Image 1: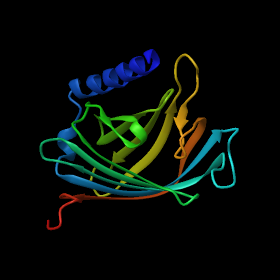
Image 2: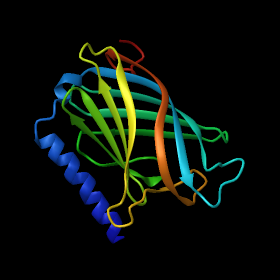
Image 3: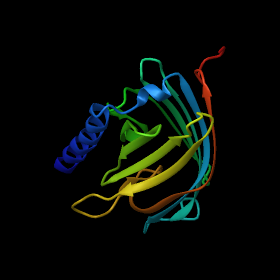
Image 4: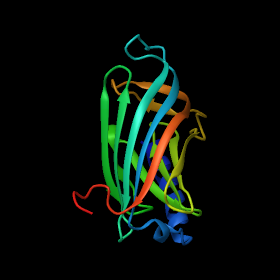
Length: 189
C-alpha cells in the first residue's frame, strides 16, 4: 500500500507541476484526436501461453477530445491478439487523477508544443503515452515510454487475464492520427 501511495503522489506531483507551470492546454481546446496504432509489447512472464504470449502486438484506438473547459475526454479500445478487448473510457481535467481500466490510475498532463502525456500507474512503475499534435493541428505523433519503479527498477502490470507480469518493453509499431476541430463524440458538429 505504501508503494501505491508513493506512486500516486509521484503521478500527482508530475501532473500538478506541469499544469501549474502554465501548460498550453488552451492550444488544444475544442480539438479532437482520432488515433489508431499497433503497439508491440514484451513481458517477462513465466505464465505465458499461446493465448497470452509473453510478447506480441495489440491494436489501440484512442479517441480524445479536449473540451472548451479544458477537460480531456478519452475513450480507448485495446484489441489483443488473444481476442480480448479492453475498453477504457475516462474524463478528467489535466493534472487530475482518474481511475482507468482494471483499476489503474491515470492522469493526463498538457506539455509545451501541443503535447499530451497520459501517465498510467501500473502495479510497479508507470507507462507513459505521448501524443504530440502538429502546429497545424491536423495530425500527431504517438510514442510510449516506461518509467520503472525507483525501488524495484521494473514495471509490473496486471495483464488482462488478471495476474502480474513484468512489462519489459512497449513500442509503437505503426500509427495513424487525425486531429480535427470539434467534438469527436458529438453526433452533429
